[in-house]
Image 1: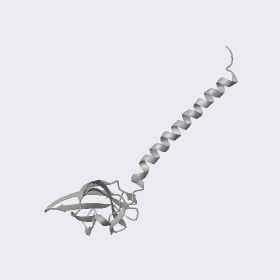
Image 2: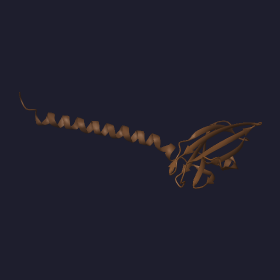
Image 3: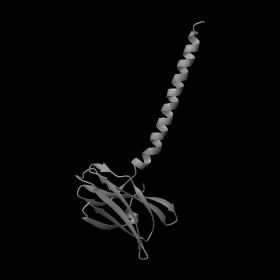
Image 4: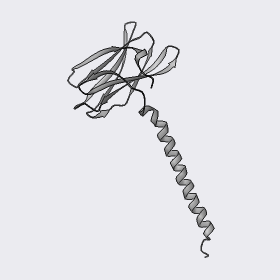
Length: 142
């Protein structure tokens, strides 16, 4: 059996480099595609015992928006919940999230329209909490 020629070794080495470069591009693409959610412009709606209920909006169409809520509980010493409420024509809809001590929750969404009454709430496991009214126009875009 003849040993491989130096040029064939370079080709194989080059193939490995191409594979590594391809993997780097795919990984970079995945990181870029997840970056916007992590870097959303969250606006503070309510602060409670080291936790912050935050919201941002995404335009859907016309006067409709997807309102997202999360709890930034990095300063909290225990778990907190956060919620947003939409009140329209006497009907209420809500989205609630929870974060453990020192953590940031994922987000949940609620579709709202201009003119809806919006409220944010924060609470603890024992039922103690508070709420606040906020305006859609003062909520940053995600």
